[in-house]
Amino acid sequence: MRAHLGDQLVIESPATGAARRDGEIVGLHHEDGTPPYDVRWSDTDEVTLVFPGPDAHVRHPVHGLPGTDTSEAEPASTPAPQADARNPGDVGRRVAVERRRHGLSRGETARRARMSPDYLAYLEEHPADPTVATLIRLADALGTTVTALRGAGIDTPPGQGHALLHPHLRDLTPEECRALLSTHGVGRIAVTTPDGRPAIIPVNYEIVDDDIVFRTAPGSAAAAAVGTDAAFEVDHMDDASSQGWSVLAVGPASAVTETAAVRRLVQHAHTAPWAGGKREMWVAIRPVRLTGRRITPADGQASTRH
Image 1 (tube, one colour):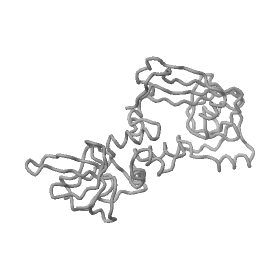
Image 2: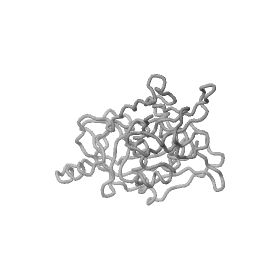
Image 3: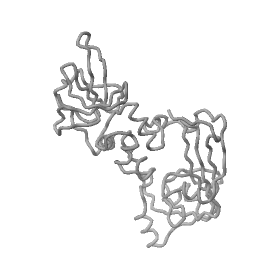
Image 4: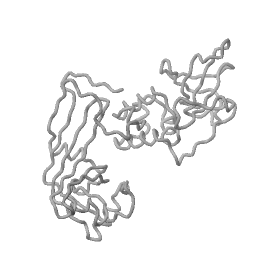
């Protein structure tokens, strides 16, 4: 018997062949994948050291299809195919992004999620199908939701959850707004296009010397912000807990044309514009007004994640 991290260990009934117990392999003790294994049991969420007997077999997940396996087509003694570490699964990518966004190491994240650092590394670097219990612990450790880590609802707008019974809406201070803008992300620029129509354009932005900067193409809708007092908005919504915040920055927008300044912005950029294409025009907004709001449960109201 050989296994890889993330495989499922199934214990069957000798009489009926039905699964009596199953769990996720979260730790290996031999590089070749032979027993024993550290197994997190689905029924108790406890991790135990297991020396599988003749009534046990390994299921290798079919990546991207939760709840399926290849145990019928592939003998348990055959090693699982090595996943390509250059193509981590969507769940692993989202976990890694959230972890870095919070400035957490893998070790600290694994400690908070009560899992092996080796398994967290495997999850971030390989396609995997973690159990719901694992996703719940990771979501809690990263301050997000299982839905967000799975990417469910990516094609639907946020805010479809139920409103809080007793919501608390408060204004944010300029200092809190600056902290929420952070260093980079995706925001929305409001402009009036050359044909006189209003438009709201999502852009990847950076914060450099308190300026909001983004790349676009000359003649694009976003470029129409240059020479105007622009409005720029960033928000974050958590459907599971019906909480969220929004920040609005208003200030003059200008094109960055000085060669050294452009070079510095290029070096500072965390990512290329998601929209792709040739977008070499940098626009900077110097906020003169920062306002924001946050919705949270009123004092004493419970907030739960699912």
